[in-house]
Image 1 (cartoon, helix red, strand yellow):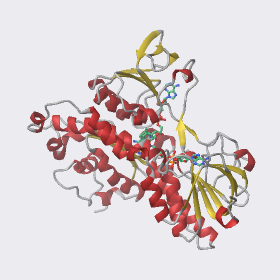
Image 2 (tube, rainbow, N blue to C red):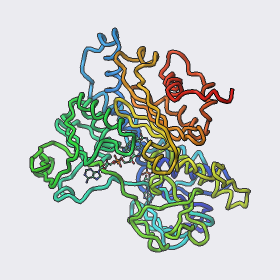
Image 3 (tube, rainbow, N blue to C red):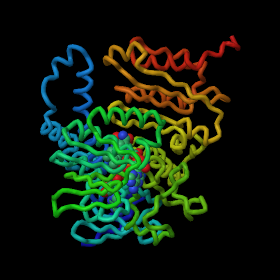
Length: 488
Ligand SMILES: Cc1cc2nc3c(=O)[nH]c(=O)nc-3n(C[C@H](O)[C@H](O)[C@H](O)COP(=O)(O)OP(=O)(O)OC[C@H]3O[C@@H](n4cnc5c(N)ncnc54)[C@H](O)[C@@H]3O)c2cc1C
Ligand SMILES: NC(=O)c1ccc[n+]([C@@H]2O[C@H](COP(=O)([O-])OP(=O)(O)OC[C@H]3O[C@@H](n4cnc5c(N)ncnc54)[C@H](O)[C@@H]3O)[C@@H](O)[C@H]2O)c1
């Protein structure tokens, strides 16, 4: 049966029904547009089924046990081992058993038309949709198309790697068996989180990292996480990268050659970054390069090599595929801006596109928060010292040992953690904050508000942290910086 033009023409077509695409579609519908959301796999995308949620489910039991083991009285109550089967079942439940029924229901309830299949551009505002049976439908967008196709794990060009069936983050977050021996390639966020999870669940983990761990963050973060991984029994090898990889038949042992020495494991997880899902999107039909990231302006309009939006200003991108900040919360922030601005432009409404306006993703530049769920956690927002200096700010870094605040001593015996605040000396506002320690994830939003709000230090003295909480680290950071009383 051939679909009628009414069924194949929409004000906006969103390609990719991950967390980000869902939000673009939702905002645009709320803004008054008809919207189709095209999804080739599961509505909800990586975050729900193979990334944020299942990975955190794998990490939580180990963190809970260690937290109890560091409190007298509670320690005595922790007498057994982690129940790995129960952890995997809980993870299965958090990943909705890889069924997207609930999210598809939400999409329908939000007034979005869900189209299942794989979308490719055939020209400006024109797409073909291929469904699971191979049937092809042509789609047309009246006003805009938003690409929210996400990213996939990058496989480096190491001899033998591709043929050795390595794990990516997908297998690592969805496995039903914990391998006895796991090698992890890459000391970034995925590598450090998965090393923590699998060591907690009983694997003998070897973590191979070319450089320092978590190298995009303050250096002390990676150092403290490295010490914690060593304490968990992880073999952390810095400056190490395999020169060849092979697997002994399907499902057999994997052998890596690292610095001339053989390392034999049951599985190898590759976690060396991401590649955009744009290889088979028909980008060549609209003058863009297949396999490339899709850079945007702050209203999320895709820009060409000249930095200007494509002719007609109809193509938007949000989420990982933009390479602005590969994080669910930041992608959803972009999605809110994009969905609203697409609707406003389509309906000729007033735009709010000045920095920090409603239709722009200004925070992507220097105010991105991120929690790395290692143990200790790393919670950071804004610029590191190195990034602030590189950007030309006149800065001072203020450090404090979190273990010294009263709240830390009741949270955990021998609490140890570090806080760093980066102060813009010219404006007396905070450009970045990093906390490393148990339970610091929930501290992060206070820092995000201080950074985004550009709250002057003199006003921050009036934001009084409750006693005895970890938040008292804020007061200690201010005291360490010193109070300017010259204007009193
Ligand atoms: C192991 C791991 C843990 C993570 N943990 C966190 C975390 O704790 N917190 C956090 O903020 N971020 C985390 N991230 C990052 C987060 O998962 C991503 O930033 C987020 O999923 C990006 O969402 P997206 O919608 O842009 O892309 P995706 O979630 O990848 O969704 C894209 C969707 O588009 C579909 N698609 C692609 N091409 C087409 C096409 N041509 N036609 C139709 N459909 C298509 C795909 O099937 C997919 O469903 C983690 C990432 C990994 C790998
Ligand atoms: N909690 C979270 O917010 C969370 C968790 C997981 C992932 N993520 C997101 O997912 C994205 C991908 O994470 P990731 O860990 O794959 O990437 P990443 O960019 O964080 O780290 C990749 C690491 O691999 C190293 N590397 C690159 N090529 C290598 C090679 N050939 N051999 C050895 N090492 C190599 C890099 O130096 C880097 O340290 C991140 O950008 C992050 O934003 C977020």
